[in-house]
Length: 101
Image (cartoon, rainbow, N blue to C red; front, side, top):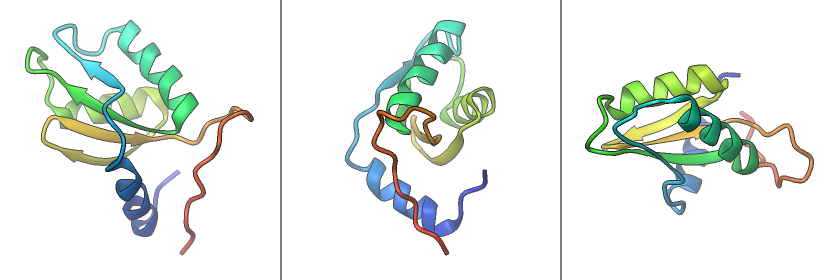
């Protein structure tokens, strides 16, 4: 699912208000970190990830690797943080309504 420019703009605006929920540290992208990110993105749809100083990855690498492993979209990468989006399959989650072009 490729996001349009308007949808990316909408998601970037929504991401400004959220705090990082996933932290990638010296263990980089361990299975535990990937599973935690998968659970978090399934509950929230839009998450912010922060790459710590001790990590061997930069934020672009971490965002691309996570997006590939989780089937998510990279919304933006700024500094040591990245924002990921994936529509949740759960019914008890309030889904983000994306604009259409």
